Length: 114
Length: 112
Image 1 (cartoon, rainbow over the protein chains, first blue to last red):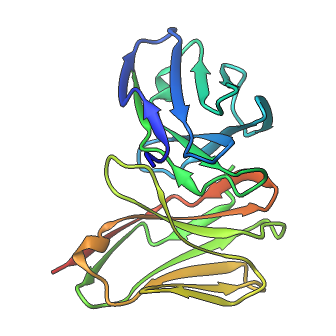
Image 2 (cartoon, one colour; image 1 turned 180 degrees about the vertical axis):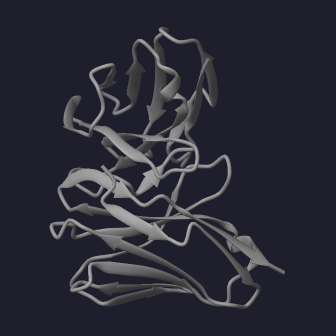
Protein backbone atom coordinates (compact mmCIF):
# COMPACT_ATOMS: atom_id res chain seq x y z
CA UNK A 1 0.00 0.00 0.00
CA UNK A 2 1.55 3.28 -1.15
CA UNK A 3 -0.35 5.36 1.39
CA UNK A 4 -1.38 8.88 0.46
CA UNK A 5 0.52 10.16 -2.57
CA UNK A 6 0.79 13.74 -3.81
CA UNK A 7 2.17 15.36 -6.93
CA UNK A 8 4.18 17.29 -7.74
CA UNK A 9 6.69 17.34 -4.89
CA UNK A 10 7.76 20.92 -5.50
CA UNK A 11 6.33 23.71 -7.61
CA UNK A 12 7.42 27.27 -8.36
CA UNK A 13 4.90 29.79 -9.71
CA UNK A 14 4.69 33.54 -10.07
CA UNK A 15 2.07 35.88 -8.66
CA UNK A 16 -1.22 35.81 -10.54
CA UNK A 17 -0.72 32.33 -11.97
CA UNK A 18 -2.92 29.34 -11.32
CA UNK A 19 -1.80 25.99 -9.88
CA UNK A 20 -3.25 22.47 -9.61
CA UNK A 21 -2.08 20.00 -7.01
CA UNK A 22 -3.02 16.31 -7.02
CA UNK A 23 -3.67 13.70 -4.34
CA UNK A 24 -4.37 9.98 -4.37
CA UNK A 25 -5.83 8.66 -1.10
CA UNK A 26 -4.72 5.58 0.77
CA UNK A 27 -6.30 2.39 -0.51
CA UNK A 28 -9.74 1.91 1.02
CA UNK A 29 -10.19 5.60 1.85
CA UNK A 30 -12.89 7.65 0.17
CA UNK A 31 -12.54 11.01 1.89
CA UNK A 32 -9.85 13.57 1.07
CA UNK A 33 -9.00 16.71 3.03
CA UNK A 34 -6.58 19.45 2.06
CA UNK A 35 -4.47 21.51 4.44
CA UNK A 36 -2.11 24.45 4.04
CA UNK A 37 0.99 24.49 6.25
CA UNK A 38 2.95 27.73 6.29
CA UNK A 39 6.59 27.56 7.35
CA UNK A 40 6.87 27.08 11.10
CA UNK A 41 3.12 26.70 11.59
CA UNK A 42 0.63 23.93 12.04
CA UNK A 43 -1.56 22.84 9.14
CA UNK A 44 -4.76 24.78 8.44
CA UNK A 45 -7.84 23.04 7.06
CA UNK A 46 -8.83 24.16 3.56
CA UNK A 47 -11.67 21.78 2.65
CA UNK A 48 -12.79 18.18 2.54
CA UNK A 49 -14.24 16.13 -0.32
CA UNK A 50 -16.48 13.09 -0.03
CA UNK A 51 -18.61 11.50 -2.72
CA UNK A 52 -17.22 14.04 -5.20
CA UNK A 53 -18.66 16.96 -3.26
CA UNK A 54 -17.11 19.59 -1.00
CA UNK A 55 -18.47 18.68 2.40
CA UNK A 56 -16.78 21.23 4.59
CA UNK A 57 -14.63 24.29 4.10
CA UNK A 58 -12.23 26.18 6.31
CA UNK A 59 -11.54 29.90 6.29
CA UNK A 60 -10.03 30.14 2.81
CA UNK A 61 -11.10 32.40 -0.07
CA UNK A 62 -12.85 31.20 -3.21
CA UNK A 63 -9.51 31.30 -5.04
CA UNK A 64 -9.05 27.87 -3.47
CA UNK A 65 -11.20 25.24 -5.15
CA UNK A 66 -11.12 21.50 -5.49
CA UNK A 67 -12.45 18.45 -7.13
CA UNK A 68 -12.81 14.78 -6.31
CA UNK A 69 -12.92 12.12 -8.98
CA UNK A 70 -14.89 8.84 -8.98
CA UNK A 71 -11.70 6.95 -8.02
CA UNK A 72 -11.53 9.18 -4.88
CA UNK A 73 -8.43 11.07 -6.01
CA UNK A 74 -8.58 14.80 -5.64
CA UNK A 75 -7.22 18.07 -7.00
CA UNK A 76 -6.63 21.39 -5.28
CA UNK A 77 -6.71 24.46 -7.51
CA UNK A 78 -5.49 27.88 -6.49
CA UNK A 79 -6.17 30.86 -8.76
CA UNK A 80 -4.56 34.31 -8.82
CA UNK A 81 -1.63 33.18 -6.70
CA UNK A 82 -0.35 35.52 -3.99
CA UNK A 83 3.05 35.52 -2.32
CA UNK A 84 1.27 34.43 0.87
CA UNK A 85 0.11 31.23 -0.80
CA UNK A 86 3.66 29.88 -0.53
CA UNK A 87 3.36 26.87 1.76
CA UNK A 88 3.37 23.11 2.05
CA UNK A 89 0.03 21.76 0.85
CA UNK A 90 -0.97 18.55 2.53
CA UNK A 91 -3.56 16.02 1.55
CA UNK A 92 -5.07 13.70 4.16
CA UNK A 93 -7.32 10.74 3.49
CA UNK A 94 -9.71 8.90 5.75
CA UNK A 95 -12.65 6.53 5.66
CA UNK A 96 -14.42 4.68 4.47
CA UNK A 97 -17.28 6.99 5.38
CA UNK A 98 -17.29 9.50 8.17
CA UNK A 99 -14.04 9.57 10.15
CA UNK A 100 -11.68 12.19 11.62
CA UNK A 101 -9.93 13.82 8.72
CA UNK A 102 -6.33 13.67 9.85
CA UNK A 103 -5.54 10.00 10.05
CA UNK A 104 -3.16 9.70 7.10
CA UNK A 105 -1.28 12.59 5.54
CA UNK A 106 0.66 12.61 2.33
CA UNK A 107 4.17 14.05 2.07
CA UNK A 108 2.86 17.33 0.71
CA UNK A 109 3.55 19.62 -2.23
CA UNK A 110 5.86 22.55 -1.55
CA UNK A 111 4.52 25.58 -3.45
CA UNK A 112 6.70 28.65 -3.84
CA UNK A 113 5.15 31.80 -5.28
CA UNK A 114 7.62 34.40 -6.56
CA UNK B 1 -8.50 31.06 13.68
CA UNK B 2 -6.15 29.23 16.02
CA UNK B 3 -8.08 27.66 18.87
CA UNK B 4 -5.30 25.41 20.14
CA UNK B 5 -2.27 26.86 21.93
CA UNK B 6 0.85 24.73 22.16
CA UNK B 7 3.95 25.09 24.31
CA UNK B 8 6.88 25.11 24.40
CA UNK B 9 7.89 26.23 20.92
CA UNK B 10 11.12 24.22 21.20
CA UNK B 11 12.42 21.62 23.62
CA UNK B 12 15.82 20.03 24.17
CA UNK B 13 15.96 16.79 26.16
CA UNK B 14 18.77 14.39 26.95
CA UNK B 15 18.54 10.81 25.71
CA UNK B 16 16.55 8.75 28.20
CA UNK B 17 14.73 11.77 29.59
CA UNK B 18 11.04 12.64 29.52
CA UNK B 19 9.73 15.09 26.91
CA UNK B 20 6.55 16.96 27.83
CA UNK B 21 4.54 19.10 25.42
CA UNK B 22 1.41 20.94 26.48
CA UNK B 23 -1.68 22.13 24.65
CA UNK B 24 -4.73 24.14 25.63
CA UNK B 25 -7.95 24.46 23.69
CA UNK B 26 -10.83 26.89 23.76
CA UNK B 27 -13.77 25.19 22.10
CA UNK B 28 -15.56 22.88 24.55
CA UNK B 29 -17.24 21.16 21.59
CA UNK B 30 -13.94 19.51 20.63
CA UNK B 31 -14.02 15.79 21.35
CA UNK B 32 -11.04 14.37 19.48
CA UNK B 33 -7.46 15.25 20.39
CA UNK B 34 -4.66 13.78 18.28
CA UNK B 35 -0.91 14.28 18.36
CA UNK B 36 1.20 14.25 15.22
CA UNK B 37 4.91 13.79 14.58
CA UNK B 38 6.47 15.48 11.57
CA UNK B 39 9.97 14.99 10.22
CA UNK B 40 11.51 17.52 7.81
CA UNK B 41 10.20 17.07 4.28
CA UNK B 42 7.42 14.74 5.40
CA UNK B 43 3.74 15.10 6.15
CA UNK B 44 2.49 14.79 9.73
CA UNK B 45 2.03 11.25 11.01
CA UNK B 46 -0.67 10.43 13.56
CA UNK B 47 1.05 9.34 16.77
CA UNK B 48 -1.69 8.88 19.33
CA UNK B 49 -5.16 10.31 19.95
CA UNK B 50 -7.59 10.59 22.84
CA UNK B 51 -11.30 11.21 23.37
CA UNK B 52 -12.45 13.22 26.42
CA UNK B 53 -14.08 10.23 28.12
CA UNK B 54 -10.67 9.10 29.43
CA UNK B 55 -7.98 11.03 31.28
CA UNK B 56 -4.98 9.15 29.98
CA UNK B 57 -3.98 6.99 27.04
CA UNK B 58 -0.67 5.19 26.66
CA UNK B 59 0.87 3.63 23.57
CA UNK B 60 4.40 2.40 24.06
CA UNK B 61 6.61 5.31 25.16
CA UNK B 62 3.93 7.89 24.30
CA UNK B 63 1.23 8.98 26.76
CA UNK B 64 -1.52 11.58 26.43
CA UNK B 65 -2.82 13.14 29.63
CA UNK B 66 -6.17 14.92 29.33
CA UNK B 67 -7.74 17.42 31.73
CA UNK B 68 -11.25 18.23 30.54
CA UNK B 69 -12.03 20.81 33.23
CA UNK B 70 -8.85 22.75 32.49
CA UNK B 71 -9.25 22.25 28.72
CA UNK B 72 -5.67 21.05 28.52
CA UNK B 73 -3.89 17.98 27.24
CA UNK B 74 -0.27 16.97 27.05
CA UNK B 75 2.05 14.51 25.38
CA UNK B 76 4.68 12.70 27.41
CA UNK B 77 7.49 10.86 25.64
CA UNK B 78 9.24 8.51 28.03
CA UNK B 79 12.84 7.37 27.52
CA UNK B 80 13.28 9.94 24.74
CA UNK B 81 15.58 8.85 21.91
CA UNK B 82 17.48 10.84 19.26
CA UNK B 83 15.14 9.31 16.67
CA UNK B 84 12.27 11.13 18.39
CA UNK B 85 13.77 14.45 17.27
CA UNK B 86 10.99 15.99 15.17
CA UNK B 87 8.26 18.61 15.29
CA UNK B 88 5.19 17.60 17.28
CA UNK B 89 1.73 19.06 16.73
CA UNK B 90 -1.33 18.77 18.90
CA UNK B 91 -4.73 19.16 17.31
CA UNK B 92 -8.40 19.17 18.18
CA UNK B 93 -11.63 18.65 16.35
CA UNK B 94 -15.18 17.52 16.83
CA UNK B 95 -16.00 14.09 15.49
CA UNK B 96 -18.06 14.68 12.37
CA UNK B 97 -16.50 18.12 11.86
CA UNK B 98 -13.30 17.73 9.94
CA UNK B 99 -11.94 21.23 10.43
CA UNK B 100 -9.01 19.97 12.51
CA UNK B 101 -7.36 22.80 14.47
CA UNK B 102 -3.63 22.42 14.98
CA UNK B 103 -1.25 23.95 17.47
CA UNK B 104 1.79 25.83 16.17
CA UNK B 105 4.15 22.92 16.85
CA UNK B 106 7.02 22.03 19.18
CA UNK B 107 10.44 21.29 17.79
CA UNK B 108 11.92 18.50 19.94
CA UNK B 109 15.64 17.78 19.95
CA UNK B 110 16.87 14.75 21.86
CA UNK B 111 20.60 14.94 22.51
CA UNK B 112 22.58 11.68 22.61
